[in-house]
Structure formats: structure tokens, C-alpha cells
Length: 123
Image (cartoon, rainbow, N blue to C red; front, side, top):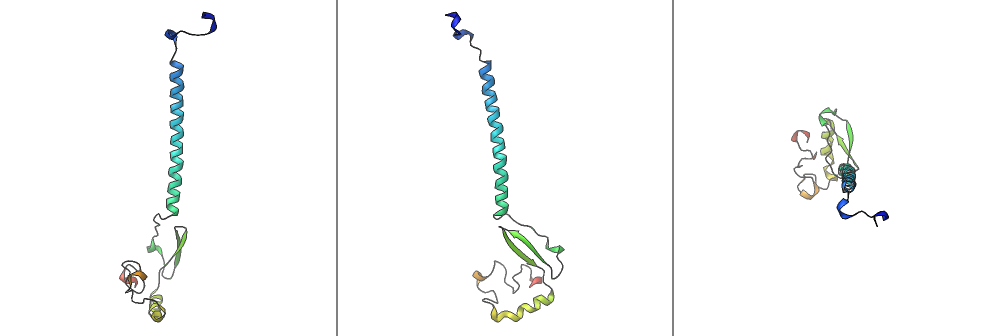
């Protein structure tokens, strides 16, 4: 029976089994790491596309200049109005639904002036 290739229980070499188990676990860990990196990158791109904050330095805008920035894949038009442009806003009150911004459903929060601006110097 010794010639049929069967090894007894006392002489089992476990070093190959330990090596294969370690190599399999290491390969799996590397694969999980790459998968997490790809998923994280895709999640960041989706977050930017669907609502992540968009920043714009409006101090560099010249009076009368318009800049288009994208937020949630939609164009947002930002205009730095001149005093002449602001003066023409008051002439169209009869065409506005809520010219004095009294109805909170028709205006953004804290925007109570006719120019719908945060700062009162822009109204």
C-alpha cells in the first residue's frame, strides 16, 4: 500500500495549504480595495452631478457681466447688475406675480427685496 501514493496522517505538509489560503485572502483583499476605490470615485462624480455645492467667486465679475455655472446638470445664470439695470426693475411691477415678495411661496428664503438678492446693497 505504500506504493499507491497515499500519505499517512502523520506526514501531511500544511505549508502549501497555508500559502494558498494566504495568497487567496491577499488577492481578495486587493480586489475589494480596487472595487471600493471605483465605487467611491463614481459616488463622488454622482454627488457633484446631483446637488453638490457649486462655488463661484462673484467678486471677480464686472458690472453687467453674466456667468453660467452648472448645478445638478442645469445652467445657473449669475448676473452682476449695474445700477441702471437695477433701476429698470421697478418699472415692471405690474407684470410680476408678487412684486413686493410678500408671499413666501413665490420667493427664496430671506430674499425680500425686488432684486431677490441676499444683500440689500444689490436690491
